Length: 71
Image (cartoon, rainbow, N blue to C red; front, side):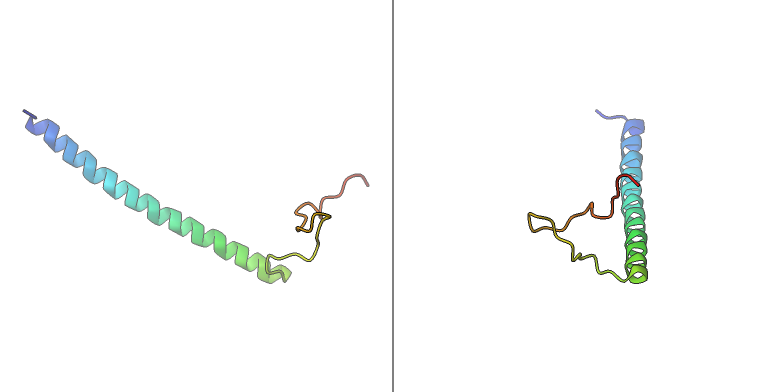
């Protein structure tokens, strides 16, 4: 038979776990929304919609086109 202390601790742990995961999800949503806002501001500032006119030989966009080696 489970003692009262053990049962109380299990219930307390369960409630703490639920509260912590909910707070974590809310905080993650806040961080994600902030990051999306920063990206939107940068795109507006630099006048890009995330698409790119540069293409490589394979036909896809080249993510490294702005990297310069030398000089």
